[in-house]
Image (tube, rainbow, N blue to C red; front, side, top):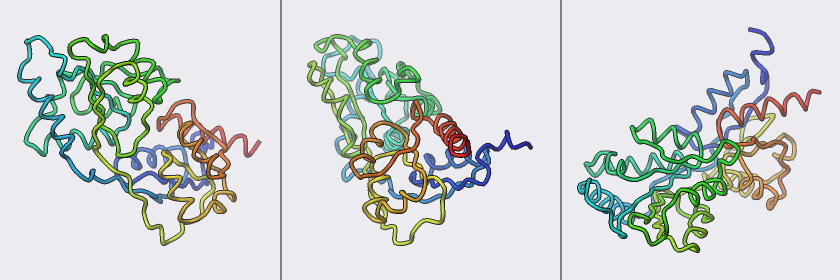
Length: 274
């Protein structure tokens, strides 16, 4: 294997994503590029304080699924929006925990913020009706795509289900509501900062895939550790949090996906050694 096959060789990359599905694929992609993934989750993604809002939404979607072929009502969900793979996982996990199948969502048009979220839905056997273009896979791009695809706010089936992490970004909801749409934002998870009593092992570059992961690191360990290394963030929202915390950002991919972030690190490595 040549050096070109391992462009991140000898680079220690701090992975601050939560343990599980989100960190695993990223760590594998880093290792394939020659890097040494340093797993150091700064947050935990846990169930919401209550499942009641999601349960009520599932019941509504389920009642609609049993009425396939009948005219849609204004009170029916016509769309469901997902802005992260974890939101998909928690939602579908709750569906199955209640003895239902994911087909309760099959009657809705599903919108995903990006390719990773769309893949998670597709892997569960669900059709994804809308994904923003590759260079617009964030909430701003999702909003643009939705506004071009949604029926009129007062049309039957225009009600929108939005399973989201507690305290998640409100851009899509706020803008849709402002335009007259009924949007039910239901909490499907909550993000909890880890204690971080032990400092991370040495690293050359730190990666942050959410504002909460970055905030937990800085609030518990200080920003000095990041000033001594390079920092890459997944997108503009996390970059804005970095600016507010006084953290320098060295790299950000054009879209929030694992391949794009790995390529972003490869480009950063080339600039650093050039």
